[in-house]
Image 1 (spheres, helix red, strand yellow):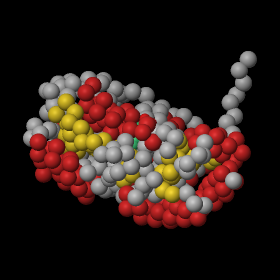
Image 2 (cartoon, protein in one colour):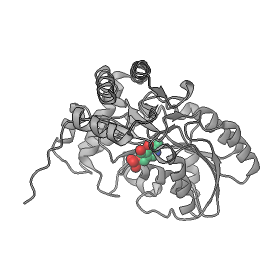
Image 3 (cartoon, protein in one colour):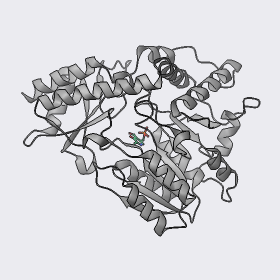
Image 4 (tube, rainbow, N blue to C red):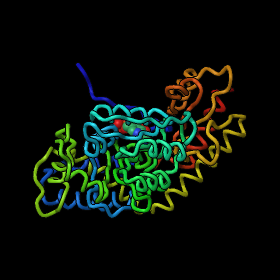
Length: 371
Ligand code: PLP
């Protein structure tokens, strides 16, 4: 007979999910109430306001999609892209490739702007692609590439889209809560994130925000959005104006308690303090790694403080090191992905996991395992 599952207490320093605060875990265990209960509706209003704070936006259409980051990505594409459209997609890692899949599944053409894994998106190349494709209606890119640990210049890329008269779709799954995400200042149009990275909440929720320009575009669509679940015109009936909330789907009530708690914690700390903490712990980790003779895989100006890509030294068995860390120290770090498999480790310092204790544990454990 099956019995209850009791996972061990890990230290999650991979590419996500990250460690979750006991406050957030406790919020999950509170009594479930109805998803149309007046108290839950009040909570939804607070979640929306807290997400607006995290995204630094006043966008009315700001809400948590009841599904993981990939669904937030899909929500942006299916609502803004119609069959026959052209979309310029910047790709410098795994998630740019996933954007291309989304564009093609919308029946549109993806014009790819490729940059090397480990490099940021080239703004010049994106500009050239938009100039060569005046029909392009959307520019899509990943702000923080989790597969490589690289940050791209979101402000410049969103400005480029605006100059061209295109909408921007921005992936902030790994950036939100860890580094500046300035939706309104950037003039970004459709932005999605994930709950399990720097927000340190349970996986499975995807905060999204749409600019008034994006909302106009959605309202003027000629083709029905291919996904019923992610059609924002329908979702707006539940998450939209507080006056008349109607059933669309059953919200993941307890997960939203958890998201609320993690956003309350972010607001209590303050965005600027959270960014400063991520930077401070990143610097300490890099100093420790370099003192051990290891080197970072990404050039300093493009590094993400919350996701540190480290070059695996010649002759070191990647998988053996990661399993020793897990077995002996209960410490999870991430493997390289795709082109970087076996070449890099990805050490996350995300959200609640970005603290001095984790930096020390990781350095000590790596030193012990590498010998
Ligand atoms: N985009 C980026 C940059 C990510 O790092 C991830 C997940 O790691 C996703 C999208 C997809 O999110 P999820 O795995 O929650 O579906």
